[in-house]
Image (cartoon, rainbow, N blue to C red; front, side, top):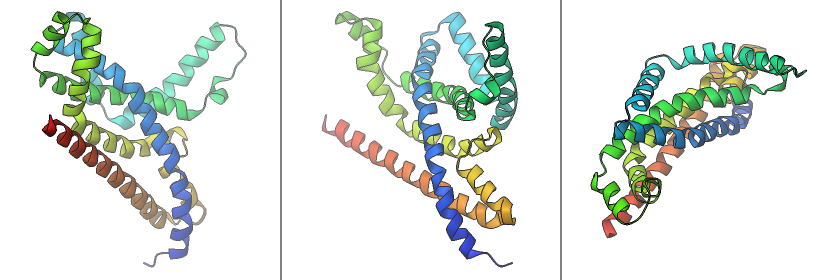
Length: 235
């Protein structure tokens, strides 16, 4: 077997163009998931009966089902549900054409990431001494202010390694966004390969791009962990 190196060189540049979509999808999913996940983690840690049970059930469901199945089910259901709502409101809008599949992908990856971050934040919160909350309340802060200004910064430091792993896995997981016709790294590679059936070369390009992106992200998180560790060492 002989690889088409010229094709690989040309396609590598095309595949890199899909990196922006992949990173945008990853960043938006993380940003939207983080506050919800932290709230869910607080419910679990504080032992809220109904809320804690609902969160536990949600986390178990999401973590216990394959991501690809979630995508296939939700991407089939979401447009239909939204379309029915729009029709009931009497609006003349074709949801299937009006809504960019990118936003469906953001929604699906966000609800998946919420479950993963919830467990990461819960473990981090359990590592924070319980006296921190009482001390904040005794100092005149509300529970919300104590969590925001005292507990959250400490929990983020503890959860940083887990957040790094979740971020890397999310970047790789977004490769399934092509199932929703999102033109990410994987989709661009598959489209380029389909013209001349150069799938091996295209997949090697995709492999290289994902490897570079994930390596950069891991290095950035490692640098952040070292900086945070040095800061706490000085204090």
